[in-house]
Image (tube, rainbow, N blue to C red; front, side, top):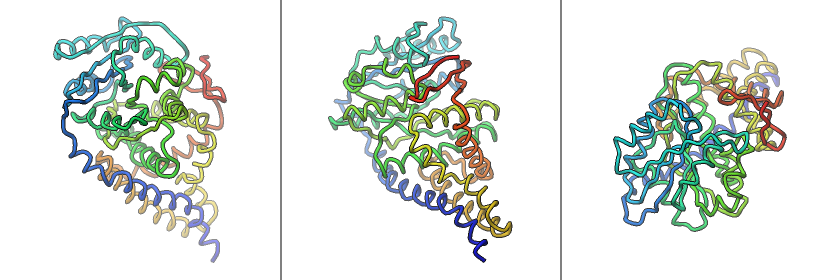
Length: 383
């Protein structure tokens, strides 16, 4: 009789955590509809310099870039594209953008100077010298934004204690099971984890898709040069600004990460890179997160209890998990991936558990054609 309860006990941590994320998601997003309807263009919106590190083509590169030229924003917007090589195929797209929006302040910095093993941050260091404004943003090249995006993120800086605003991201356009597999990680894992961390311990890190910050906050941590040795430059930027005494804010407006068709292998490689990066960035929290992983709970349920009880417990858990993940997908992220791609959730959870374990088996990662070793302090050494 007691053995029949073991599968339920094995899944209890994951079940409890799933319910906790639902509560934290409700608390964070309940004011979102009010905030989004409150956006109105004002005459005192601050000027901003947006740095975009680019290398090669992304899905819909031109439309991604153009979305920053179509903002409902009264302040000055300076776009700075940071490119390392003069023959990069994205450069004609940037020239096309300049021709289409001739009255916009669009800059192209082509500079191959390497400042450290993180080539993305090297690009940003090279482009920062062109930035004219005190409010800065780093935004990935595959990001597309709504017309009220800048209004939303800059509004937080009326509080003088705010040093950085980070934006959550989603992917609502997928090309099949492989990209849906990755897109599900945003709504079923990342965003629930972020809003829960925000509620329980406050925000001490940034999400790399779009980060807006004061120039003074950047100077307080030693500039972008303080990030060039790290792989997790987004985490380090937010964490260093937080430790410098500034307040971090998670904006409620999502940006769109445009996924291009990829193989499962490339997605798995990227997932492993992320987990190994997270392990060295937040070792204590990363280790503790294993308790709440559904995949580990499912495996334990199958090992500990009679098969009928284990299957019943797993079925009940996934009905709850699909319900909660669908709320995040339909109501909070509005990516509408669920319930259509719900059959991928168990596979998604097994992958998360496998990569969580694999993060402890080595320190090597592959990133944009380069191989690195991550040192215990999170810095990089290229092999």
